[in-house]
Length: 82
Image (cartoon, rainbow, N blue to C red; front, side):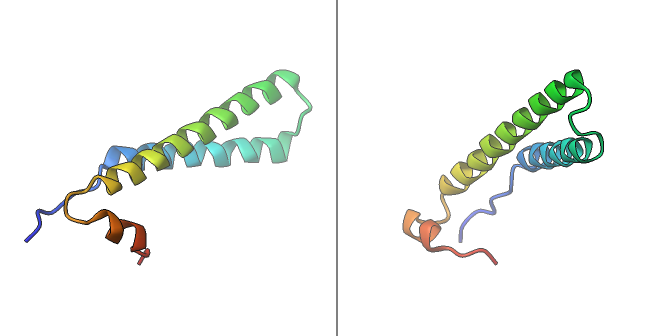
């Protein structure tokens, strides 16, 4: 019997927050456009940062799943999402 492995909830929270910021920046682009240069630069920076963080923490979650002791590496590669 394998021990129960719990998800790291902080990774999910960070991914959720970055996804919300990404949605917010897309809404700002949609409603404000590039009329204000300072706003466009700030929103572009936030957009790039949130995408990078989301991508990084998605990879971190996959890596932590890969390290789980209750599943073999072959099973991990073949496992399909539910």
